[in-house]
Image (tube, rainbow, N blue to C red; front, side):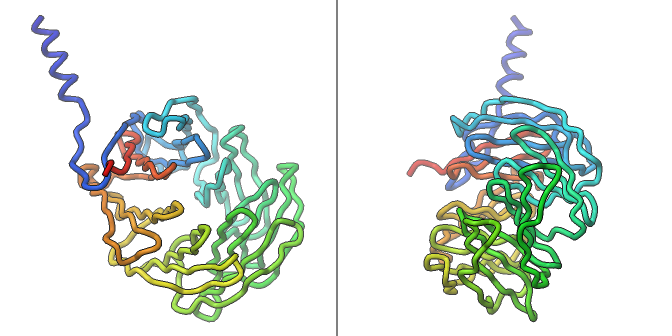
Length: 326
């Protein structure tokens, strides 16, 4: 009986206790064994954790897939050991594809659906990349290139806008591609209609005064384009994607990473220990902060699905947060 009582006390004491976040609450937890480095990717009703249990900071040989049919209770579907080359540099995740740079001229594509990898020798450095259907849109020093990848590992270049690009970023929404790059000490933006990927059409082109150095790729919603530099978040409004109208700027007085957006909110990860949430249409509204002091600067990555927040924490796992009911 004494042993049973001790066991019960141990189980009770091991229960996760969380600080009283003002606006959000932790509604679930999924352990990830000995995670030291990793990234979360959301794709539809699926959440992927690509992670490592060492401190090598490799891309992560372990992959877990969870179903998000119940967003507060991710259900483990699969665990895989991946055989990825060492020293890959993460570039981007979009839908079911993860892009890495293997060397200055090589790109590696990981398909999360099939777990296949393909190495592409491009002959140029990828600054940013997005994909739609079986086409890749690649921003390079030598221009914006469109590649048909329907027969990987072979590919065919079907379009090249040869204007030099530096500090470039790409963002895609439906059939609209936002193409941004440095030009004469400020940024220039092009909006392309890529419904016909082999013959993209420019629907807007113009300069972005006041934007000098982008820290991360912009975000595009039905109404807004959000631009992230090192010191501020800028909001532009677009009218049917053929006009950019500057609206507001929010100064950021601390370093941040991993910006993400929903249709109405902007999420920023501050120094690995807290998440700030900004109302997209009102920069004057008070910013919501999810204090991460409890996690002791160990937030590795976070993802958003239907405004549920998933936070991968070192040596713990995935914490699931939702807005408190009003």
